[in-house]
Length: 272
Image 1: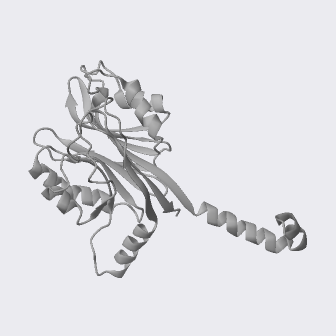
Image 2: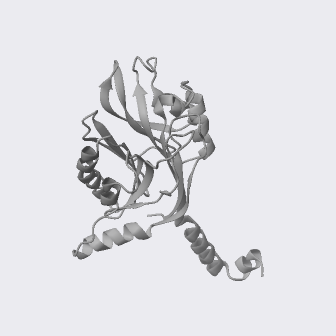
Image 3: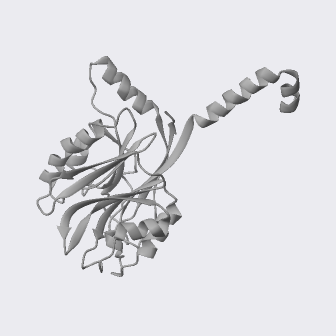
């Protein structure tokens, strides 16, 4: 029997059924999350080309991107707002988080997103060679954060409780952290990280250096939180976990635009 006949014979029931079907279709969403250390747009050929970086981003068609190594108005970048230019070239919204003053401008990390965030949190992280930063953008159905961790193992470990604190503010939403962690999967920092975060990207896939990658230091992870006895906290953590399913996980095989290869995942989540 066709929908038109159902509507004619059982107009009220048909409308209710259609509304239920529509509600079911709207209860789930998907998003593509990406991480890319762009090296300020300087490729493996030592040429600065932001259009080339934008081409990589556009090819991946991500909804939100964690971007590392970004100059803003520095002399070495020719006074350019690197993230702002990438936002223009990709049609995305920039969220910048400078970590240090450098060469007449700023240097740090950022996020590119398709939709404006509901809120943004920026927090400094330790780094004895240079101060680091984490930036978290809240969206309707999840929170996405970007960081570029210290080259020093001790500072990475000192960063962990700060990252956990930022993640704990997720207000019941799934929390994703992406970036260049400067640590390989077997190192103590990653092992400690996995006590509260689940790694979603494939740790067997090498991401650096881009032309002949032999180590994995770029990740996307999801916050789980600690197991606790308090019932409401347990329920909040369970709800957060149930709302997200991993669909795919893959690197992008591009070896020229930067010294890192970007990684991205597709997620499927239940809308709030």
